[in-house]
Length: 142
Image 1 (cartoon, rainbow, N blue to C red):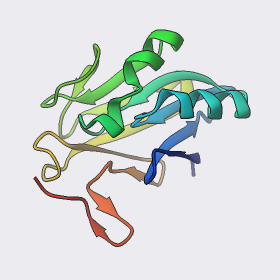
Image 2: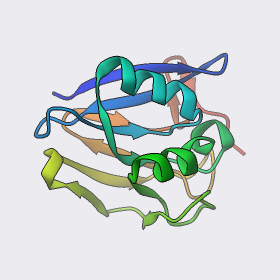
Image 3: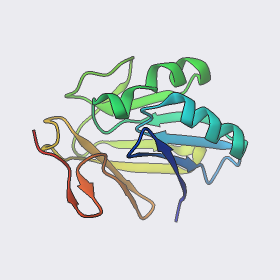
């Protein structure tokens, strides 16, 4: 199982920080809407950001992507059918994100509904589904 830390952002969001199993001080972040919150978590946990996974284009999920990618040189992976704030490897249903040097692999699933190009990342017993599922239901459909 992965070591995943929730990072609170804004008034009602969580960003997800994944400690890479094969690279002790490396991390991957999912949907970093707030780069300051992620920077604080990285510093507190003594981690170096290596990759960014994005589920969809809404500001509370991508607001910190460009700054974090530039600051850390982190690779960015995001939905092929959505606008991204910086260069990203485009992903769609059935693709795989392989971060072999970090010991991480995620299968990409298209989950349109909240946005048309929304994707989710599944691997290592975890599902990072953005705004598709919530603890009490599903995300808002547009």
